[in-house]
Each structure stands twice: as C-alpha cells, then as structure tokens.
Amino acid sequence: MTIATQRRVVTRQSREQRETAIMQAAQRVFAEKGYEDAAMSEIAALAGVVEGTIYKYFESKRDLLFRVMAAWYEGLLRDYDIGIAGIQGTRNRLRYIVWRHLRTIHDEPALCRLFYSQIRTAGDYHASYIQDLNRRYTRFTVRLLKEGMAAGEIRPDVNVALVRDLIYGTIEHHCWNYLRGQGDLDVDRLADELVDLVLPGVAQGKPAAELETNVARLGRLVERLERASTGEGEA
Image (cartoon, rainbow, N blue to C red):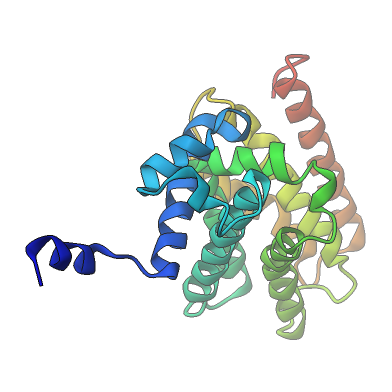
C-alpha cells in the first residue's frame, strides 16, 4: 500500500462524520451570514466537501437549516435535563430555567435570531419537528410549576400556561434589542428580577387578586418593551 493510499484510508470520513461536518459548517455560516445570505458553496468549502455532496444528505438549504436548528434545540434540552437535576426548590428551579434561557440568548444571539426570524414565522414551522422541540423546551416550565403545586409551593388554581407565556414573552421582548446588536444583556440580574416578579403572585397562600396584579404589571412591561423595540418609547 502506498503512502498516498494510506493517507486516503486515514482521512476518509464515514457518512455520519460527513453529515456532522456539513451541519457544523452550516451552523457557523448561518450564524455569521444569516439564512438568506448563506451560500451552499461556502458551507461545502468549510465542511471540506463539494457542493453536490450536501444534497446527498439534505434536500435543500431549508432542510439543512431545520436540521441544524433541531440539533441545536436537542442540545439545549439535554442541558436542561442535566442542569436542573440537582436543583431543589421551586424558586431555584424556576430561576435556573429562566437563567439558562437568557444565557442561551446571550451566548448564541445569531441562532436565536434565526429561530425567531426564519423558523417560527414561516409556514413550514407549524406541526414541524422544530415546533415539537420548542414545546418540549417550554414544557420544562409547565412541569416545574405543576411540581411546585404538588409540593404545596404553588397555588393549585394557577394557570400554568399563562405563567409560561408571560415568562417567555417577557424575555423575548426584553432581549430583542440585544438580538439586534444593541446593548448588552445582564443575565443574572434579569433572571432574578423576572423570577421575583412572577413567583410571588403564584406562590401558595397568595390571593388571586395579587396574581392578577402581577399579570397586569407584566403586561404593561411587555407593552413598554414592545414600544421600545420599535422606537416608539422607552422601556
């Protein structure tokens, strides 16, 4: 066997390795260029394959984007499972979920922008695997609140879906300027402020009127943040 033949044997990639290399390259290019400006030729060059090879593994650039985002989401879900396993108490667990979500936005704004602008608003998102992953992702919060009810820490009459939407909706609106490259994001401070705003209204022993007051406060906060993100006012 010649040296050249030996080199080809050593460097030959399996199908799984080649697919992984393409997805890693695509994630980098999508993050740097955005979906519309990402060129399949650039992804191929970065992955070390010819452009035609990509279509042996992915039907289209859109399919490649969905696969990249699905792998990203699956990683986030694994991190949640691992991170929350050793945390006790409803407040601590809720704080971790909020903090972890904010940390993802802080550390990977480009991928978050891709999800908001290219995935969630598109017609092919509905009933897709990505939508299912997103539901599983936010279901951590629902499950935590229900476990808090079972432990006697959260009132049994709380609308957990409403609380979930308030948390993620507030985070999205508050972080939108950061995702557009304007300003920074204080993850620790915001996680504490949001949990301290939400939790007292749903804690066991709190009257329903207090929950309604907190819901109204969060609603006003979201409205201010929406105006700020469009330049109509200040948050």
